[in-house]
Image (cartoon, rainbow, N blue to C red; front, side, top):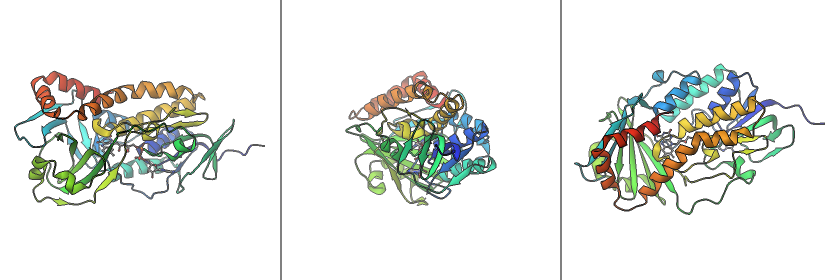
Length: 351
Ligand SMILES: Cc1cc2nc3c(=O)[nH]c(=O)nc-3n(C[C@H](O)[C@H](O)[C@H](O)COP(=O)(O)OP(=O)(O)OC[C@H]3O[C@@H](n4cnc5c(N)ncnc54)[C@H](O)[C@@H]3O)c2cc1C
């Protein structure tokens, strides 16, 4: 005899993807349990730029993005890491973005979960087993399991879905500085072999996230960005450096029987377009809808439809960053042909 499930849906991982999945599922009346071993609020290496599209999606979860403590930004500014005269900027064609500290976003999503009475279970999942009627993980049973356990997903690994990782992949590291934001855009300082993303996240707080190849520590990496160092001057670092990577993590499939993968766990290339949170929320919505309709297999196609543009654009931009000395002509091109830059921002920031 099969045991009665404890939940309709077990969600593994309490980052943006897991929290969004649990909120959506609870909004639709499903019984949800969320497994997350870390205590709230959870911090993580992130650029913390919520694109206009991500803010729209938060509204659907019952969260008012304007009430999130943070700092608005209206576009992106690329600048050469060294040459002060070389830059290009454009604004999102519709809406604005918001820089929000990870812990702030996490707290608000967690509050929403509490409002919906979702059970939070402080357990780590190491293996998953399933049969025709349900899934078992960490001693609990559910009709479906949604894996939202991030870049290095244990659930994906335990199901044998992780594919051979790409030979070269990047890492990221971020830190915050007590400084008044000097621009209303996310500023991307572009060096030959790394970028630094500066996001305003408060009235006197900016985040600096660097993407690079190989291993690296924050201070030595900052030497690649003399213009940014000059801007920051003697601004006080107020968080410790936090890293993440390697980024390129792919999955053979997004659905395995009654297990569905969302957010970074479902596959990731690189954070350079700043769309991770938007994708996490989007893919979680599609997974919950497929579960509600009793056709989990449908999610595979839905996932491709939702993420195709991200993978295509990110892969193309990632390859561009691999070409030596390409960034200066690229910045000149973006400056000379503003519609190209605005068009690209429309793709990244829009739905
Ligand atoms: C340097 C950098 C800059 C970025 N910049 C941006 C940006 O500006 N804008 C943007 O939108 N995105 C950005 N991203 C991407 C964004 O951070 C991710 O896409 C997003 O966090 C994905 O959310 P997630 O919930 O899938 O995974 P995560 O946020 O990684 O959450 C996974 C959760 O699962 C839990 N977990 C892990 N293993 C287990 C287990 N075995 N059992 C139970 N729980 C488990 C973890 O504790 C964690 O809480 C950036 C990323 C990096 C690294």
